[in-house]
Image 1 (cartoon, rainbow over the protein chains, first blue to last red):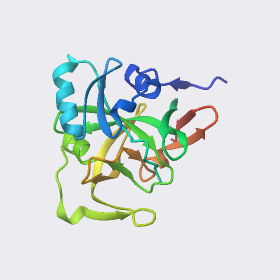
Image 2: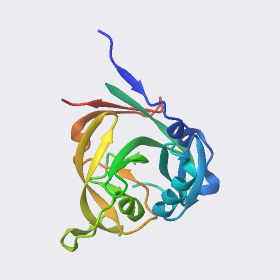
Image 3: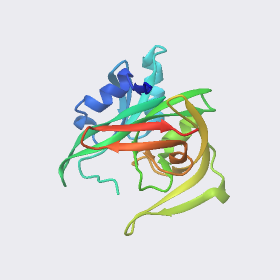
Length: 72
Length: 137
């Protein structure tokens, strides 16, 4: 019996996983079409800026932790 | 259908590098009337999911005074939140979950256990850099 497994293929997700985002440390980023289109400390403002630039494409929001953060 | 997510390697002043499990979570925005994509860190030790203030604003949440709580973490760690119910989608599984909406933007989205981990069998394959979500019927 074959098992159905779906590896997430989303371009924005893959970008977040693989990219060096250290220049955005401590900030929220919006990713559209595999590129960072907006960044800042307030994810709402970042999303609003990205909406203007996305041209209807999917937007992903992600946080880039500083190198001093450990999640406990 | 099982869904496979991945770990992201990040620099750390404390450990050199650190690998964090990242899952795509979608949350429904009543303000924008659409699903919002967020890449969140899976936190199996967290009792409840945490989102920053700005994400809650995008989703259209309103502060209800009687639902404002202080969550205590390890040591002296505390974060003030409003407990809200979010419509969430992971893969093609859609459900409601109680989450903590933090009054702070300097927190990542942390995907905790309450109302989420009971919907899936979640396997962390740290060495392979994969996390597998298997929906539970």
